[in-house]
Amino acid sequence: MRMFRRNRTTGTTIIELIFAVGLFVLLSTSLYQILRMVRTSFTHSRNKLDILQTTRIIMSGIRNELRNAHDKPVVYEDILQIPLSPTETVLYHFDPTTRRLARDKKGALSEPNPHPSQMRPFLFSDGQILNFEYDSSYRDSNAFVESELALNSKVWFKVSMKILYTEKFDRLPEDEKAKIIANPDEDPRVKSFFMMITPRKVNWLLQATQ
Image (cartoon, rainbow, N blue to C red; front, top):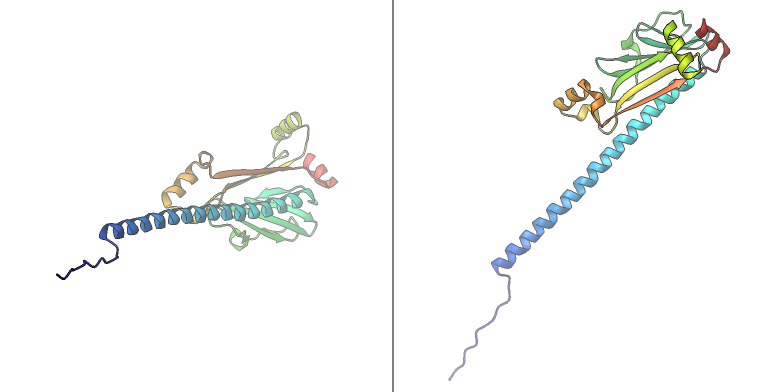
């Protein structure tokens, strides 16, 4: 009598194949989510660093120019004018429509200002600066008295900026742009920076108190 043996073949069943494919898809999805989170976090950190560095450059430059001003800074035609010497004046202009801050120079303070379109803007994305304001203790008599009573200092010049801190403004959806512009103080991504400067030069002080 001849005995027949059933040959056993090894291989994957359809259930094992489905399980392997499902496991691969699950791992791939999890890895993609992790990589996406890392990339998003890195992008936000890089944006914050770029914006912070540019803000520091702007504020540091204005601070040094105000402290070393030859005469008291003045605002004329919406342009902040800081006279560094009798023949050199630094100019700053903020366009509230495009939200671009520009800087330029001219000769004496009495010379005419260049047109804002001719001034060189800072390397901020369009709209990144939401607001740029300045104030002084000598803008009028009431401000002078308030400064004397509250700060015990007769002369100061204040510069403040509101910046979209975590993201690039030009990359946001239009509805988010409109919301931030309408109510910047209510958005946690908007940060305020300000500084109050007192003069070093004696004539700065004397001119401001006159």
